[in-house]
Length: 107
Image (tube, rainbow, N blue to C red; front, side, top):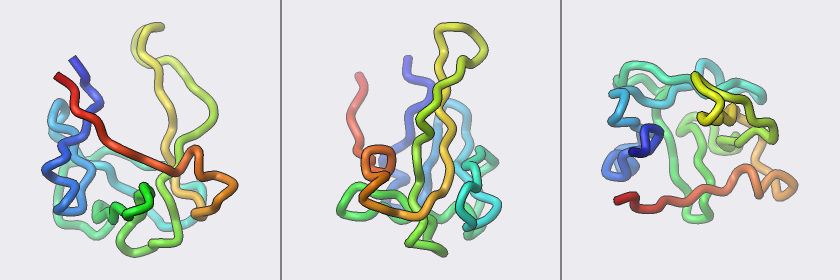
């Protein structure tokens, strides 16, 4: 089971929705370094996401800020679960490896 998968049907609605937990990705600010949290889905602008044709994910209210994967990994509830922190950082070519996203189907 993939418990951290996002519902691709909700991408078109501008939401990063995790059906396994019934929550959406949410930011509290559009400042660099703001971490991405999970919250009950709503129509708040802090949950509104834009998926670019180049593979970046940005807040609708700050399209110069990209969803960025941290370099460090930590363990979750067990040693087998690994967690990467997601934050907002200024979109840049230097960070493209951590700011470019795609999707895949999991059976």
